[in-house]
Image (cartoon, rainbow, N blue to C red; front, side):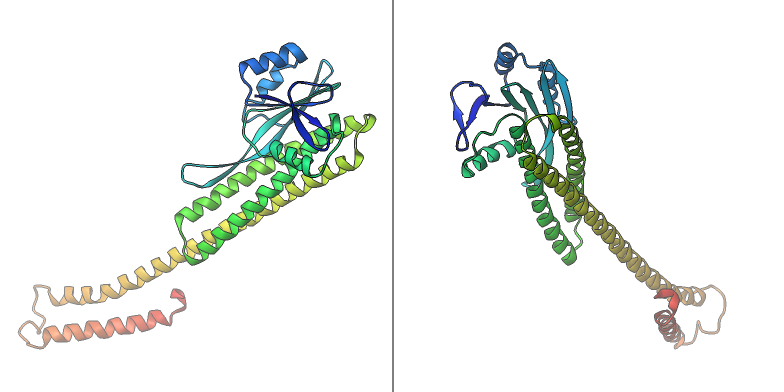
Length: 310
């Protein structure tokens, strides 16, 4: 679907393209792609690259077009009603008074940016300033999702403190995967921003806006890295707890096995088919039981106070 947006007291939708407007293309059809190619001579290979979920952030140039690929954060709900975070490519194309964004994947960045521009009564945002504004909004949404991840991490930690559950451990592993996605995408976006900064030196743009994009992108990257480090340490702590619990169980089983060996050995000697002087004695069996109980008590006392079993 193709929509046209003009910035006047915030972005508002218009019926047709006008010079300096923003062309927003979401999940394009073949008719949409044909229109872009015929009317604006858009490099189609770059748009097709945006359909690849693994496409990396980069900056290209072709026929006076500036082609910028960034990765935006996405959130969805899976079949198990669990929140899933990911990233997806967003293609941005600029040439003279033409500004186009192409996205094949649902995300909240673009719609929220339009609403935000209306609340802020934004005026005359186009060209490179619009590009920087979209990158700023992308970094802000990374930070929002990271806060959500942090809340999920804290909730999982509280549940794991009460009970070590496999499902909670799998959730924490999933959060670690999401953080890696975010860190990788943010590093790519930071590289794209560095290349754009070199290009924008000789072009008109809002310098303060560029600084804001750098700060927000770096903050999002630092936050994701910190959360990833915290999650790694939590997982190491959980592994240590699981290992300690396993050692405790094995220690208990070892003690029980040792104690049960004592009556087994005595019963074995007592029940051998050789004369022992106790086979006709009526107190022979009770005596074997008493000896077993005493030796088990002495053995337990030794184990209880032995450093080897502490």
